[in-house]
Length: 435
Ligand SMILES: [Zn+2]
Image (cartoon, rainbow, N blue to C red; front, side):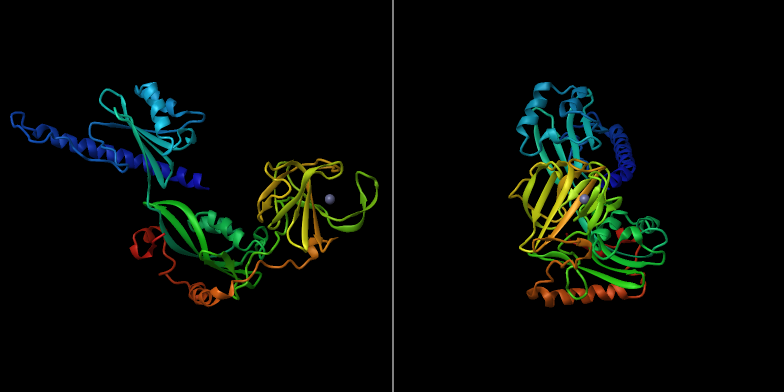
């Protein structure tokens, strides 16, 4: 997602560089002819102008480039007559500031050269919010700078025609917001089954560096009307909790995910008696089979501790997790157990524990998901799954105040003051809240 944002913004960056270079040349053109040769100036007429990275650009040319696949730091500099020894020293001395082995292909960098074409500075941008300046001079040095990230609150209303994704795109909202919403309401709404006419209002944060959209922040609050039913979400965060709650302060998250994998279909449900396709006999199937592409990540459906992670003749590669005194889950037929997943390791809900395969007794790639309640295997799809704890009582009063404020914003008639377009927002300083 972030990559898309950057790619979209790159043309602007190029234009900005061209404008800067043009301005610079124009100013130099203005300056040079006026200098009287016979007048002794106390200071040399060296412009101290620096660019947005703090590099003194007078007398230097700027080459804007992109790190290519497999390019090393020394590859970037050798065309600019920077000695290999200097490059190696710079990389070694500056490792604590920035490790040059962390250069990523696709990221922009600039080289500043003097009139002889020798590299004087290199600026690399690991992301929009930070940059590294390498001084390639006689006393080489590295500094890393962070840019300010501004957080702006935004509000969006919409009615579903096709999908949330398409509705957001249609309103020039970054589609990451759709992913955030799907996370917030993962236990309430199946976003692949939205209906035409479902409607929503979302209050969310956008993070900017300068006027570049850097990332989408939290969904602060949301209202989703799905099949005529109202769903609310309110974000509450302090040093202890960071959750989305419903209007009564109940967590929207359940103790267990509905499924351990992004699946294509349920190839076999839970039954106490069925015909086994491999063993050719009637046999209970005390799990749910989720067919998915080989290699799809498998997620722990709840927080817990790994009790088994190994190969078995029938189960293939499998992982078993104990969640508490009541619930245990198991995931079979993995192509591979994720490295680091072994008995005793603590996992969080959603953590990847392995990858879909068909090891053991399996006809095709799927996850056989098994669910124990009080030591008995049950059909998890028929169980009433408990929620994660509600808002802790000591924060309830505070939560209620905040919820009421959000609720007003979520239920107010569509209002131009909270539904500003992107361009207007950028020009409205009071919309800026400090990060
Ligand atoms: Zn199965």
